[in-house]
Amino acid sequence: MKAANWTNYEDRLNRVTAYIYEHLGENLDLQTLADVAAILPFHWHRVYHAIRGETIAGAVERLRLQRAAVDLAQSPMRIEDIAVRAEYSGVPAFSRVFGEAYGLPPAPYREGGSHADFRPAAPFPPRGGWSVEIGRLTETSVLSMPHSGPYMEIGRTFEALFARLARQGRLREGMRMVAIFYDDPTAITEDRLRSRAAVVDAADQDAAPPMERAVIAGGDHAILRHKGPYADMRAAYLWLFGTWLPQSGREPADAPVFEEYLNNPRDTPPTELLTDLFLPLAPD
Image 1 (cartoon, one colour):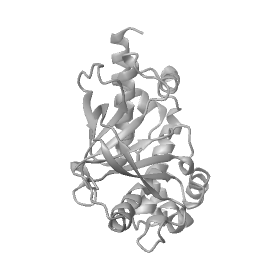
Image 2 (image 1 turned 180 degrees about the vertical axis):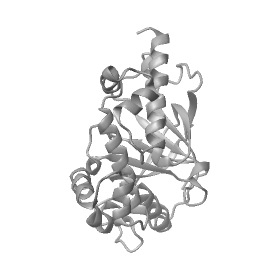
Image 3 (image 1 turned 90 degrees about the vertical axis):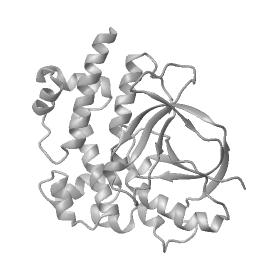
């Protein structure tokens, strides 16, 4: 496909991705999204599926359930309200679909999901078997795009990054996916959070805007391998900083935390997602 055509479709699909994230609580039928993409409805679904790798209905449902998992793990919202916010007709329908995706219905997930392993009262290490290893990394160049706003929405920036790499013929199987997080989400409002969606790539390749080069610092890092939904990450970080770090005898380095995603949420159940959390450490 010619570069101009790639750019055209990239822009259209990026508009759709942004629209989905911003309107998860509204009607997201194919006609509406076809209008956003400016593609005839007859062909819209096939175009999205072929380029993005998942159906539009699958993407919308995945993101709504992901947001619902965050609500269950991190907020006191009533399950009835979460079901409505996720666009389900009632709690029974929501419970069935959520349970199929996350392994537990909403109420048991809220009380005993994997995020519960990281509560302050949890044993050390958590009952789920998680532990922290210290590994030494070399300084690594990454190709990235900046993201601002809620960390749970960084997927939209990954979509834009992958689309740009595909247009340039640089997207390949097995690229390491990392996200760099510069701010503490418990200290500032979500709209001010800064992060990067990135892939580990050859340092001598072009990084024309909106892509940018960034560097992951070398040195010792505490590495926690997390298995489970992304909604649990906030609790995992609280445990890492509040329980593991004080007991470790180590000090954090003046560098941002980052995550490496070891499988793809498009084709992996939330309960099977693997993510390595990296906390930079000052020299021992």
